[in-house]
Length: 277
Image (cartoon, rainbow, N blue to C red; front, side, top):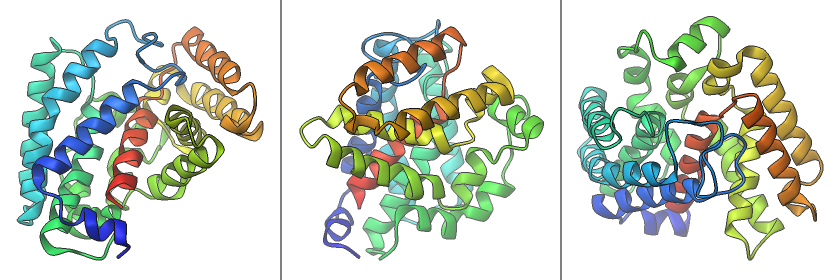
């Protein structure tokens, strides 16, 4: 275990939860993210804005604490799922029915539980490895919402989806998300927002984002991945005109009603996993 991870392994449930909630707030306050809500505009969304997302992130902190505590005692997937469903109900009550963070409750919530378990037992493994080893089978064998946008997209297009990603230990997070954050930090060491934008584009370029499939089908996903890849090939946030380039992509997503919500969730998860070590 690295020194950073060893220090992180001593975190309590409330500290883990605060870090997870902070990562959600940072994701919201990142601009421009193609098609996504930020403190500047609502992207391709008509039913939510940054203020609503911040309320949602605040509401979820208590449930992240519960998930970290449950993870610390090795709770089974059924217990984590129950906490997640309670978090979803609280979120929907606070947002008057708007699904602001359902995907983050699942993905970030599992990483939070893994952080709690690692803290309790000082395990020399990444959070993703812990999720796969401890809860992987439970994730895949559990009930799946029959009519969720993500589940429908997985069935229609054969996408891997969030459940498979989590059960495998979040390979995209460790292969793409964290390295992109680190690369963005190297490109713009004095601009933390730039690193987050760089990570977001890297995730859009690689992830089979079921939100994009739901909104734009396979053509929408292909368009989004092509635009993100082109931004990265120009140098990402190392390019002198990166803000203008990113804004142009953002506007093209809005025009096509595309929103890569899965990539936004993975951006927050990448920040959290990097913080935890």
